[in-house]
Image (cartoon, rainbow, N blue to C red; front, side, top):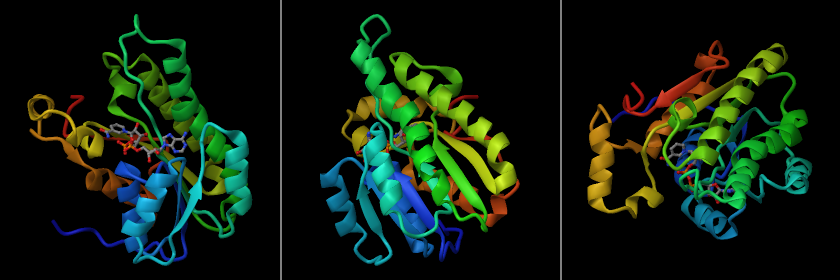
Length: 247
Ligand SMILES: NC(=O)c1ccc[n+]([C@@H]2O[C@H](COP(=O)([O-])OP(=O)(O)OC[C@H]3O[C@@H](n4cnc5c(N)ncnc54)[C@H](O)[C@@H]3O)[C@@H](O)[C@H]2O)c1
């Protein structure tokens, strides 16, 4: 399929959780479009692999970042040299269990990463955005933010919180040249889902009106569009990329 060609030359992009999965694909697409990309992730092993995979791109930077740790976020901000134009808050975890079985630790860890983490990183980097250029905040939510899901009390709550923060920033920051939007992916094929048994994956695909799981590239396409000048009037929205799962 032909790809839309964007140019993000001289645009600074930070992608949290960008060392694998959806975040890595987003990083790759921004690099292809000429952006100065910083992948910030807490997995040093995954960062190393990402550096090898993306070695063609001299403008790639990596940073060890734990989004749950405010000191770590402050270090990222201190070491960030170029102006920032696009922040993709993508880092996220799951600790799925039925509500009755969910532990306080399961709940707290997911809140700290998926919700407080988005607050921590955005707060730390806010002053790094280029005052004279269009600015984008793109947050990775999930279809479960809008519809809930079995076993995901913690995760669904965080993603709904992310949607609410996204809309609030869309109101507060628009006058300073920001747009703030969220993407709500459905079931996306990543290393994690590839490890699941085929019959489970087939069962998931059967629930999706388009009859298949999504690809990381389909999330990246949406992210680049939201970051582009063409999307300047899209602010405070949540784009579902889920093959119609939530209809
Ligand atoms: N894969 C899906 O089907 C799907 C569906 C809906 C939403 N999402 C969301 O998309 C985002 C990416 O998902 P994915 O499937 O690529 O996940 P993934 O597990 O493949 O990647 C997540 C990345 O985040 C990093 N990370 C986790 N905790 C971190 C922390 N405290 N600090 C810094 N980095 C941290 C991990 O090291 C990893 O590189 C997540 O926010 C997820 O909730 C995914």
